[in-house]
Length: 308
Image (cartoon, rainbow, N blue to C red):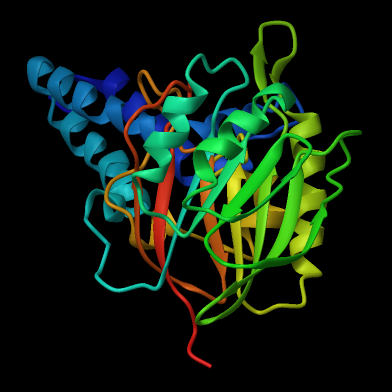
């Protein structure tokens, strides 16, 4: 009786080991570790499949074994199934990779305005479309700056605006001080390089990883205590390659979201690669916005700034 379903039990143990020791899967070959961590929550889909197979096989061994990965998955991600949002907050922010090939920039800008945010960050801005986005957002956001392919629109005055060098050869990150009614906030907007999955090379993420390290160094050197990072990081909070950023900032989705908050691809979101992260600020709520003309979903968060 105990030998029946031994293969299913072995698969369950393998799944448990991948969940527990995902950070030990090496990146030396095709960045397999980062690839696994990008889609780590989806390993949970294997649990009900193994459970059904164990029941059909009538295997006590397999049924006991499948409990192990289920427990580990719930420990890692079970909290994300709950609504962790709360009322309050004095700063609402939105970030959106608008997609350089967006066929409806005017509609996208108007949809973002409906969110009523205090700050809107845009990534992947084509130079030729900047006036259109700017014109649609100008009435609600009198202060703005575009640096390279990223931009920030604000209801509050901005100063000390500058590009941030993330070692790419062109500008895809910026920083600004926003003077909110509750104090000054350092706001970073970033679009890290894209990653690709190729049969001959695996998960090609080297340039993304170098840019993340440079961004992390810039944020670590920030002199203001309240910091917000908005952008498309082309990586999830589980991806060890983003540790230079994630180790010093909190994800608003992890702290105050409802569900996983997947943002890409917009047609069937599978990963949270668009991020709102904070340091010295309390996240109160985090959510995704409806689909626009982009291949990413916009994401938003409501933040509580520290009292002076």
